[in-house]
Figure 1 (tube, rainbow, N blue to C red):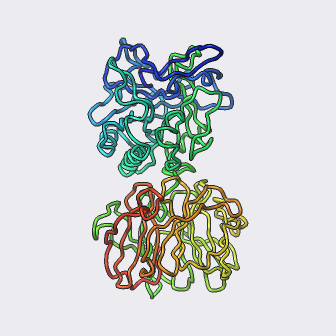
Figure 2 (figure 1 turned 135 degrees about the vertical axis):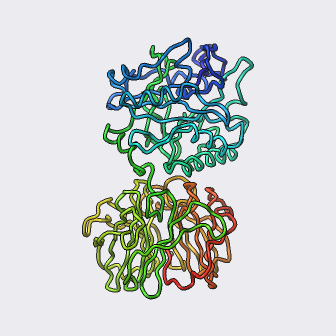
Figure 3 (figure 1 turned 180 degrees about the horizontal axis):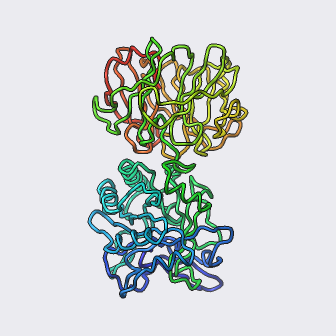
Length: 552
């Protein structure tokens, strides 16, 4: 989709040398800017990307992406004919920057849908222009987003600056940004789109751009990946590995005679339908603490009399405006000695996990509706013997879209019970795997995703008030579940309750803390796991929260 592709393979002396990007001949362009998704070319059309089958074997769901350049010279796109020929989906360029909108966007986007294809929009990223929130807003305002069951998650096109008559439109290859500036720009753009549409957008890129320009960042692995490569199979991408959602496997510059940009979906047609019609998947898992599937965490609070209440998140982090009015979940919840929340059935709605005095662990599946006494369904038993654990929390530690249960024994051994995704008696979790030893030193444990990689991290408070985060590796293997701790800050021993949830809908979890005087505050996550930079300054949620005996 980028109008100009770097195409320079020079035969030098004894072999083939990949040389720096060279300007391609200009195609007649009906619009400017010229950006279109064509990252498969690589920065110089490397020889290693030249040998692949025209259609990858093993994939049956095919589609294409288009921009205004598909209309150059008066051409049109016959979507009905493409559907008959077997196309299942299409992505159409919508915007670039804050001012440009593809003049053919509505024609192609609606034409594809009318022909029976699933359709999605994309924005050509311009990090050199700054203002990621403004670019994201322009994108959302132009894309005609709807939850009609036929609309695919939109994507951000991240690749090399395209050529103009005077050279690249921006400094190449990374638009003049450092890796830290680039990842910050990407995070702000994606977070804004997600907060506007309630779905995690996708990232389109090529490893030859991604690795140098983001520093091989793994921070965005929670977002679905549209990988572009002319190779016979997509290369491993930092954070995602070989786990991709779409693959742009052919463009004209791959040298196979194609005149279009061709893609495959990594799944069945039913999987594609689910991606278009659902707010959750393994790649776009629900927000922790979200009981109404709006992408914003809610706060669960139990009073001394056993009344359990949920306070819906507003998505706004502003003093005393973070939560909506309370809605009753039910009564009689004082009988439980431990309570936490997590999505154990992969439906994008959190469930309530409880433990009784006799050690029975139970899950109450969430309904997705915040209405009095209708928030959860009848309980399902997870198992017995859980009274021996001194701390229980929940998080997705293997990035499969199903939350797992973390449990600490009295001797300090921390274990993870991987979720199965099945709500059936005694079948909700698998056998335990040891996370590590020595966890008895911590006075509080919880979990959440603090670096936007789609893997939950473990938050631990020591007796001296030092709060640390152990970043999840995404692998549930003995003693390899988390990385070395990073300090969040000091002085956290004063808080009587700590919990986690994404209250500002930016795909980074935030830390919720209650002081002894009942003031509840939120420390929004920065998306970066760096010493003393994991969370921002607190914002007050409200007062009077000391009356509750449990918060999650």
